[in-house]
Length: 82
View 1 (cartoon, rainbow, N blue to C red):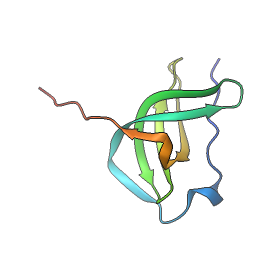
View 2 (cartoon, one colour):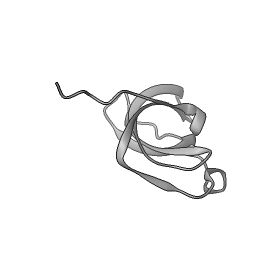
View 3 (cartoon, rainbow, N blue to C red):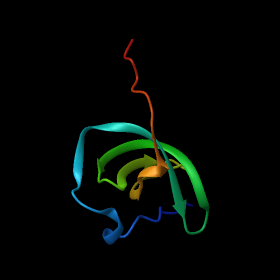
View 4 (tube, helix red, strand yellow):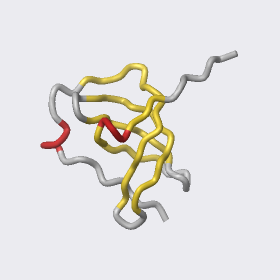
């Protein structure tokens, strides 16, 4: 069963919100109410000085988005295309 991530509240996200184009590949720590913490792969689509907006696919194949603390993100290498 899919359990949605707990996203930061708008007051915690901060300003300014800057979009990332293209999105940046990341590993992200997501917390869910019923299932706790899990580390997943996704892409960061926007950021502020303290938070990042991520799009990810969970271990059940469900896509979701969430705002997380900047410290919950780790940049992944982009595929080289070779």
